[in-house]
Image 1 (cartoon, rainbow, N blue to C red):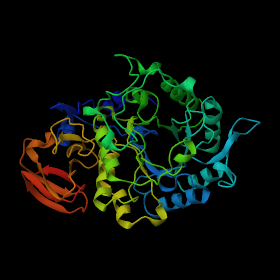
Image 2 (cartoon, rainbow, N blue to C red):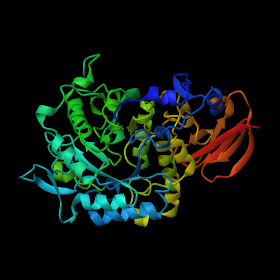
Image 3 (cartoon, helix red, strand yellow):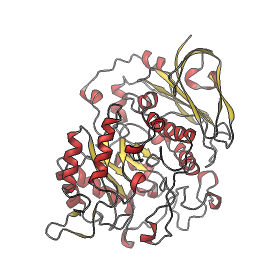
Image 4 (tube, one colour):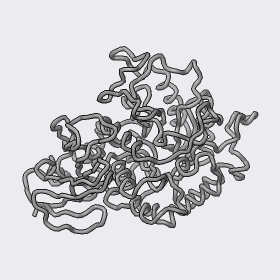
Length: 484
């Protein structure tokens, strides 16, 4: 369940080598070459109905929408709207309860289980789970690999077996497992480099993604699977594997302990950074100034930039997680909402909606339901993401939180096409041009049939290149079909 089965995926795809590396950047071979590589896909049950966690998760999570202000009514409103708005029909399936669902400060004295808050969940978590399952959806829950959650509620360190058994009995399908409330004797000896901070970016010092200010860096060659962080997360992994229910396991250790090297042998996805919301309403409850949480482009751009350098870790059953979606939240422009979703989708990150669905704007809903991006994201044959073929604003491999790579491409078997994305990372409207001869998958021909990925408009036979005047922080993406 938690192993990287790239070999199996390759065999299912006919054993073709679908990756090349050019200028240090990984790119997929053109769809036509993959299809011509003696590929006769055998549609086994595994391919038709992929096991949980094989593809990146699609769903909704309560935190970015409500933080601690949750109850059974709000969860079921979200679940019903996932069905009524057509989100279930396009693949969204998880309805995830985040922090603050339990009684605070105490476990059940008779069985040591966490107690669902009876005021918020009068029929317990199992009551909500039954209703969610009746809609044909799946349900997720939250805990932490510490003594308390980030909001100060009971967590699972030392109670992994008890909690895993409870989650299974309640009908849970997904566990988000955070990294708060860790006692001193469970903290790591060394600190791994995570080029990310809760501080204002102007105070950052991460030259080209390095961390020169670490007070206790690990020695060269240190094996992070010997760390206490790794041990805390495999304890819950093993507990989940020992229950009679398949539960998708989402690690949320904020990129610590070099999780990218062991995440796919431990869970189905793993967080790579601090929260997408830099500030939070509840911070005062655990020693930080209270602030209002707002979605902001600067933070989305920072995280996208960081995840670019981790794309080699993306494949079936293993997905770096740049955090939940902010589409529909804060003061993001429509262009920024588009860019945020498109980047997360082409990087094949988990896509967990984080806005109240009963009040979502129709333009934001249309972004979340984009059929081309979702088809690329859920490709059952190619597990890898789209990757940058040119940085654009910066030279190749530049770590720049304000200006992530702007030119991307990737093959999709579901679209039978190459997806090309171009981003304007600047603060003003600017022209961007995708040149076919620069795109690894499109070299060899100068004209292609092209579809506008946002509008669905058939642009016809486009020769040599495509140009667009993009608003600040907007993206265009193209579905590039056969040559013409």
